[in-house]
Length: 435
Image (cartoon, rainbow, N blue to C red; front, side):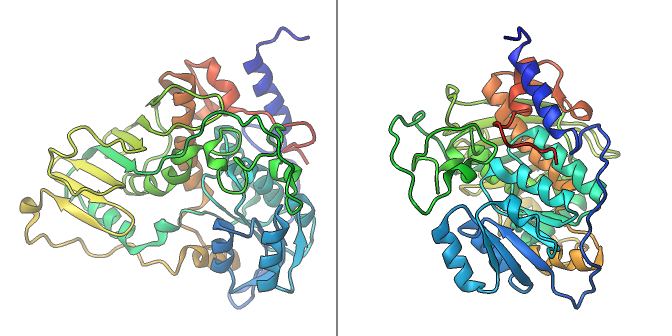
């Protein structure tokens, strides 16, 4: 048996698996781009995950040709096929992605399958819409981001709130200087996912569920309804808890408004760490460097009922989830659909800045239009990849129990070798990012 540290083995194995997919290595595969398209053409779309969030995504792209549907649950697949009877059906997305008539793919699986499905699609030259967070680990997110850029595929992360008018007006407000330079942001969410350790019972797998395919690259464990279909976000093996579910939605607003990218440091606090389950509450402190004329920013995330210190005393609206920008001349509080300048008395008669960000044609429609025209999307992976990495790093800091000094260029915490297995998690035998 090797005496090499487990963390080094984990990183080495992941690098071996992902060598053809990105992070500082050459990519030799030839782009397999689909047919040229015009704005009047319809995309041939394959969907991976067709129920729940995946069902909503399917509705979002239903203006196009839905030619292939994939799900590991035959009941979900039957229901989707009834809506799209001309579509071919698959349980294994690797088989679906061998088709030569696809133009684009929507990935709406649990987090632990995002990177494998995305890399396989991108390597085939297919345009990609992927649900958030972009991947299950920081290294996977970087691999997918780099590969999408190399393959010149049109990408969009499933942060649908980005397309709403409210976020656009808040970005205009912040960038106009209405509340002055911003060095402090607080982001909170009422959501809470947690659990009580790994189940010990081993009930039979339902006949409709292809459980081994649901596990995908995750390490094997016996089936239990505590994991699938609904509660997988509570388990580190499959999801990233409340931070992974909502971080990309709420932190999207300060990332956009303040032109953030990678943090310098990440420090998390929460309840005692479980090897199995995500925390019921969490507070994560991020520091970001100055950007051109913009000052350095401290951003703090809270979930599970936690709020910024002094929140009630500051006479702010009692919103269960939101974003608070603290500027030198005032504050802006926002959630998905509303925003407010504070203190209200200081902004009586305030005239909002002129609209400079066009209203969206719809988050899915933006992606569809860009696939046909080559134009940009607002949540392409060059933007949303770093956002996803930042979100995921909060959980890494929490699980290792220390502040991380983050070296984004080399995808590592310079002061935390124990974080490597969480950043570069290896896949189980038979699954690899290599072609």
